[in-house]
Length: 334
Image (cartoon, rainbow, N blue to C red; front, top):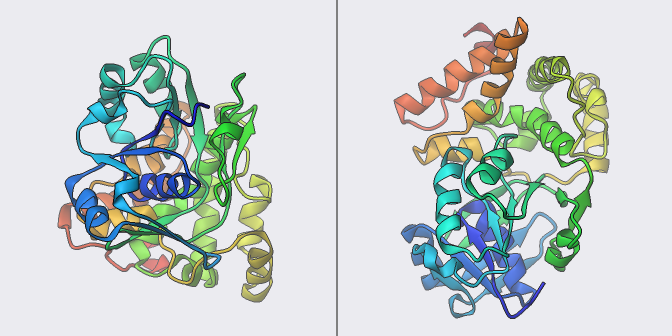
């Protein structure tokens, strides 16, 4: 990639600001298409990216191109799409109008339907799927904290985009099966809603057997639906997807020992859906559990837990009071 041309971040929220900050800290030119609130924080405090391993990078605001005007995409070499799935159509149309035709477009979004939609709205352009395995929490004053470990994965292409986008402390790997990876991430992301409903940090949640059994049952529902579609999910963790439900059901001490060997989780890490509820934003429940129930409807499968979780998240969205702080028993009985 030509380092004289910037990398555009289309939707600089938590993931977008972290990725953009790490790229900028490595010396890349970065253009952040962001909301005014985020722009104000960065203008006042700089862009501070911190990591679960204790590292920290601070990028001064004047080292970034920062705007809510999509014309900042006019000379980018790549566009990293980090908006919520519901906003994909709108951001695709902005990219079509403002980004150069030769700019590669990479979806770093949750869900499995964004790449087909981007390709539909951006005919003739290079559009690659991607998967971000880690959580990022916006802590205010321009600080974005990566609270779990893992490397970004994107589709392999002839231009070797993965290697060209990689930066120190932000590894990006290529895969020949990005669809499988995205489906595997969707299965794991079914816990986003459970964490949002619990109102407790992810590590604390995973340390409790009742929560893990609930997550295992939710994963089992999701995996049955995905396999009914003839899809083979690829786990975003070092452990195969099929191993996860039985591992989650292990005794606490044994599970936590295995967890510590496979990934790092910050003590205060929470899901992006929890943050959405706290901030009164719409969640991505339709692109996670909603995908599972849609498959179930087509295939005649029973997915009662997925349906209950959707109901509870929508109720929390409507109440606008943040996480309801439910127990596993309350979720099962809803």
